[in-house]
Structure formats: C-alpha cells, structure tokens
Amino acid sequence: MMNKVLLIGAGGREHAIANALKKSGAKIYAVMKNKNPGIARLAEEYIIGDHNSVSYVKNLDWVKFKKVDFAFIGPEAPLINGMADMLDESGIPVVGPKKNAAIIEGSKEFMRDLMKKHGIDGLVDYYVFTNSKKVEKFLIDYKKPFVVKPVGVTGGKGVWVMGDHFKTKEEGIKYAKKVIEENIGGERKVIIEEKLSGEEFTLQVFTDGRNIKGMPLVQDFKRAYERDKGPNTGGMGSYSMENHLLPFMDEKDYAKAMKILEDIIAAMRREGRTYKGVLYGQFMLTAEGPKVIEINCRFGDPEAMNVLSILDTNLLDISWEIIEGHLREKVLFKDLATVVKYIVPAGYGTANVNKGTEIRVNEKKIEQEGAIVYYASVNDENGRIYTTTSRSLAVVGLGKNLNLAEQIAERALSHVSGKIYARHDIAKADMIKKKIEKMNAIKINRR
Image (cartoon, rainbow, N blue to C red; front, top):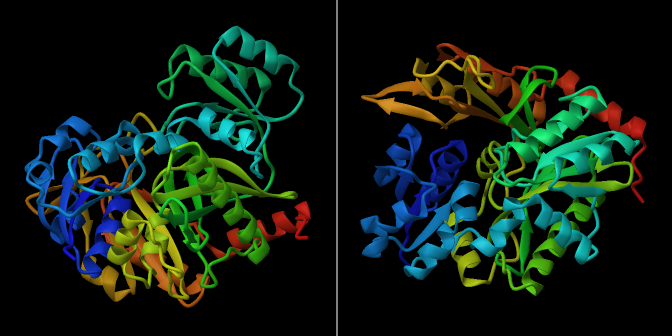
C-alpha cells in the first residue's frame, strides 16, 4: 500500500500529526498558511498557501494529478468548509469528516439539537436566540448562572462564562446581544447554556463511522494567564496521566464519556452523516457525571500533542483503517504522562500581541531534557523563527509520572528565548491537588 499523505494545516497539532505519520512510514506533502519549520523538515514537498480554502487546494497539482494517496486534515475550518468532500470527489480519500458531518463543530445549535433529538446523555439546558431583545428579556428573568456562546466557530475565544468572563447579568446580556448584532461566529445567533460546576476534560477518539477507539484523557487550559486568569485562548497547555485517566476521574467516568461519543457517532450515521476521522469531546465532569461542553471535528490543539506523542500504534495504519471502514480492535498508547506547555508571543490574547519578533529555540537541548518541540504559528525565514499573532511553539515533557513529565517540560522552556510568555503553572502539583479537592467537594456520583 502506498503512503503519500497530503497534510492540511500549519499548527502545533499538524506538526504532531506529521511527526506521527512520518514515524509510521508516510511521505508527507504539506499545505500550510505559514512556514512551520517542523512540518517543512518532515515533508517531501510543501506549499505555503491558504490551507483553509477549498478552491485553493483543489487547484494544486498534488490533487489534480493524484500525487498523494490520502489526505489528513488538521484544522476545523477546511473540514467545515467542505475540503474532505472536494478531495474525495477528486479521488483522494480523507481522514476527516465531510461537510455534513463536520457540522457537529460548525454549529453548536446542531450539536445540541442532535443530542436532544436522539436522547443522548450529557446534554445541558440550552436556549437559542436570533433576536437581541428576546435574549435580553429571557436573561432578565433567568435565575441561574449562564454561559454565552456564538453558534458558529470562534477558535475557542468566543465563549463567555458567568463568573469568569463577566461578573454581572447585565454584562452577560450585553455580550449576548453583541454576538447577535455583530455576527460573531458567522451567524446572527446566540446560545445561552446553564453554567456547569466541575472540572473540564477532553476525550478524543478515532472512528470509521461505526467503530470508535478512545485515546488517553487530557485536560487543557484555555485561559491566557496563570491561575486561569485572563482571556480565553486556543489553549496554553495540557496534560495527561500515565494511566490514561485524570487525577479526578476513574474508569467509570471514562466509560460514560465514551458512551456519549459512541451515541453521537451512531446518531450521525442514522441521519446520513457518517463521521470518519477524529472526534474530540470537550466535557465537564459534574456531580451527575460527564456533561458535553462541545464536540469538535478534529484533534484538539494542544491535546493532539499529548496523545500522538505516546501513540504506540502506527498512525498510517489507523488512517487507512478509518478510510476503509474497519478500525482495529485496539489502538495502543505508551503508559507515560505528558505535559504540554505552549510558548506564545508577549501580549498574546490582547490587541498588543508582539508579532514579527525572533524566537531562539535550542532544539538539541530540548531533546536532551527528554522533551519534544512542536512548532505552531511561526514563520521560518532563512532558518530564523519569527512570531505571528498566534501561538508559537509547544514543548512536551514525557515521564513515568506527571511530576516528572512536568519537570521535563519546565526545563525545556528554558531553552527558548525571545519576547515570549508561557504558563508555568500547568500540571504543577499544587494545581492538581486543588482540582482533586474541588471534585471531592462536589461529591461526584460514581455509581
């Protein structure tokens, strides 16, 4: 079987995918909007161009002349835009859902309605509005803490949670009206959801549309600053445990989350929206068990780096099994803890982000620490690395336990310099202790 792979995307997630595919024996042909030096080194050939544009990719020689055997699409935007449909029509199979299945992330309203229609567990109370006066009237009378979400995709930056992103009901009303009036997320709609109490976690799965194989649980951190302060970001870091669970979760919690994702995949199939690729469930573990925060149509970023760094099964084989519809019985991962810490340009998350400045990375010393480096939204110009407005690169510490993995990641950070920032508190022992204490106080029902 041939193994030329078209990789779409330029972030840390895509560097991790490229690394896993290369280890599996694939030859990589990459399309990326900026020159990610990690992907560029792994690729046989690469093109710098708009990897989110279906029409742009359609006109590439690699597509027209069938130079590649299949495609692996990293980001959500090309999937939601129909990239998988176009490639399939061009004779190139894809790891990633077609447009009618990628809507699971493209529309939070669709996702909630699907769960409600099929009676899937983990659903929260939600209300959809298209009129700013009606959402204001509703919220004035609403008695519970709430969350304001654009219906469409906002890169993890559009969700506002009461008590975190706004303090008063009036502030929440103002933002809800703004979402509708300014078309945030691409639709003049807003979703109001009940605010959940607990700890967030990520469960990612491989699926061929019928079979589903889970990956290690991951917890990520979206807030820009330490102690979970500041604006939401695409993710500042994440961790996973050597037992593939989380410190505040057990196998029953994992099984319940898996059942929810299995039911979502089955519901999609019944509606003629067969889902093939990677599905990413963002959950809140509550006193009643896992509740769905959102469902995404691809690997998480940074969560892909956690799981792919310890994947023990050939990703090339998994990809073909997804495409051909016979996903194997077991997908194996090493029994190692992982800690991802993202390095971002100074001012990231604000209007004053430090763009276009050089970052110095000593990859050799990072590797000597026992860590992995994955590049993200940087530009490689004549061997020098420059910041963009987004996340720059991530280091991943691997260890036989979480404490060791965190220490390795932290030491690796010292080998990157420039006008940069990183959250040093991610996966520290005191942070983990607080999470365990919080969940113990909530008294999770583990029956």
